[in-house]
Length: 214
Image (tube, rainbow, N blue to C red; front, side, top):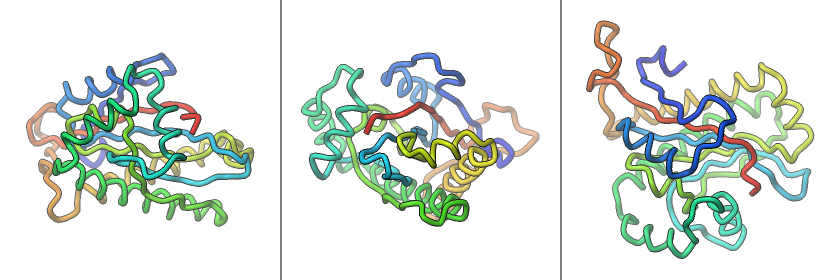
């Protein structure tokens, strides 16, 4: 999908092998990615809760989101206090605004596509949180919770290839929409005749994981 649109896509992992949060961010930085997208499956209480939410870097805005961030970052070696200290140094960074715009584009694309398959799907919105993979990456970055494994209906739909493909298509569409917006500072797409690692390649670093336990 994205490759066909002249993006270079680098996956932090292609299997369920364990890769630390720092290693995922380090790989994205080493590859000089233009954007970073972390793809997650959520876990919510009560089990009837479902929907899609997308995060970008910033302080969490309440105890519920503090708990989500603490759970997500539990194996990172950083406390929430450590992450807040890091946030204070980069709060005004321009990539935070670009991350917000990318989160909005991804969330809009996901919700629009998935509500066609499930009209009752909840739009849980765009939110801020100090997730390690968002703090430690050097480019605009978002974390998308694309479905809830804790919801029986969503878990069943995730078992169908068509549903997963629709999610993938919607994610790709959201990234393209962000990259094509006026004012977004990303290189122009490469031409077919250019080498894969040409400086004009738009690079997307992506990682996928399972339930965040949030």
